[in-house]
Image (cartoon, rainbow, N blue to C red; front, side):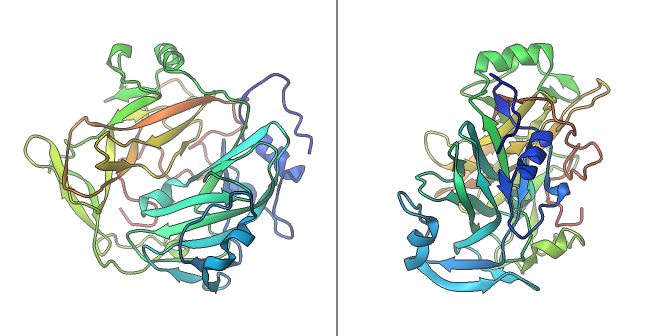
Length: 378
């Protein structure tokens, strides 16, 4: 379990250390091989196992194992092999993942949905044995990983080996303070507006760097998409290789006069950030949900931004805009152009990764201008 970590260094483990963790069986899949292409610049794509359990409700194990805690709530066992199974919308499922962990005492983990997962409104979170928290994996954890999956807008077909979420490993706490982020941006810009770095005095902070909405849109006033009611089945594994027509699943969203949109309660929207984001090789970022004090708005389920997102190694970085997943809670909620709806937090990398996001590794959303996921033709 020796990862040969640099002494006294803190930060997110880059791909070269994730590969060491796999070789040392700190991350292990038993009789299965972990595909090299699942190793991202600062995260690992985790895979669904061979079975899924339809459960009555979501649970946390507390002082028990997940297996023991959930056994009284299992309604059905489903086989994910071959053609997979259909997961119905708004119903929870628990799926053992193929990967398990034997973390060293100083290494902790965190999980988040993949961007493609959040964009199809599939809610996921990792559960570990004897834990009181979702997606947080304690330093030194030794045990299996389970994924709770709840499709919210569409029924989806999933199969064994499909990756819906990602794991990030870290040593210590390397979180940048707001002052740290401001100083970093002044030397190496993190946010851009129409190709130019945003002046430091125009940045908005509050335990992270805020992003606003683009509700000006294109020449026709279109700003994004809204999930249709009663949409057909989305075959998640197959559509990633053969994108499907988005029309049965999505309706276009057009701004009102004044560059604003009134959100319909409980409907899922895909919108774009007004600012473009640049994550340099020395940092990793996570986008966190932002709930206004009124509690009327929920934004962004997918979290990790790997080093290299929106970054140009040639020194001509202009950033890449972020897709924002937005849902109003109980009443219609008006949002306006530039309104701050989510924020980025930043951590130092333990070392710069050997591969960056977008550099010939099949990254799907570098330089994106479209909110839809890779499952849909654009």
